[in-house]
Image (cartoon, rainbow, N blue to C red; front, side, top):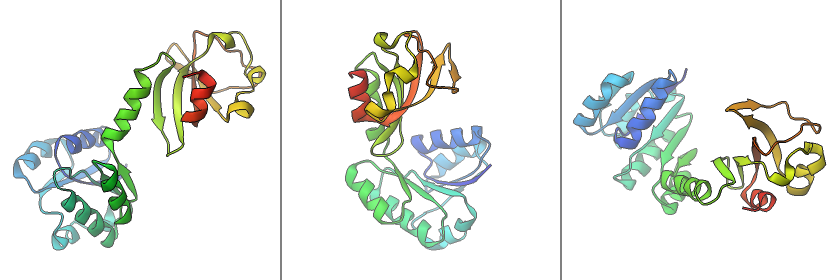
Amino acid sequence: MKSILLVGAGRFGRNIAEKLVEMKHEVLVVDVYEDLINDILPIVTDAQIGDCTDVDFLSGLGIDNFDVCIVTIRNSFQNSLETTSLLKDLGAKKVVSVATNDIHEKFLLRNGADAVIYPEKQLASWVALKYTNDTVFDYVKIDDEFSIFEVAIPESWDGKQVGQLSIRPKYGINIMAIKANNKLDVTITPDTVLSKDERLLIIGSIKNVRKCFDI
């Protein structure tokens, strides 16, 4: 269990808060709007009304006691930037901030954010890959180069052993697991035989995955 400070109780912030509570974390939510605080208070550990661009208010929260500070302010980039910077100045261990465009992302990283969430951009990539072909069922971006993909096994691989396909040397792709009937098998060896009715969980670059699976 971790202690989380969530700045911003809007729709996106509330969704994050609900997930954090489901995961049994302690969550303090802060927002300037009383109605949002009253709405979210029943589902979190605590919620306070306050202006997080006010250094005195933030100082009173004991920022260095939180494991993670998440800034979900989306209606004012200036406030988001100021809050992110102040949190880091006050000793925040980790600050994660939400961006709404590429420029905001760059400025947040330069001004104290340890990580940036860019929901629209990340969701756009996911939708584009998932719904424009029959090969990719899901994917999670790891960094700017590598992602984890759930992909269909090509018919040409049906009945063949993993070692016969030389996937790693040819494409730089690692098989993490085989998925069948919603169950994962992570005990993959060169002798593992593949079936076209199964799916693979792999890690690799988008470029190499496209080439390997003809996406």
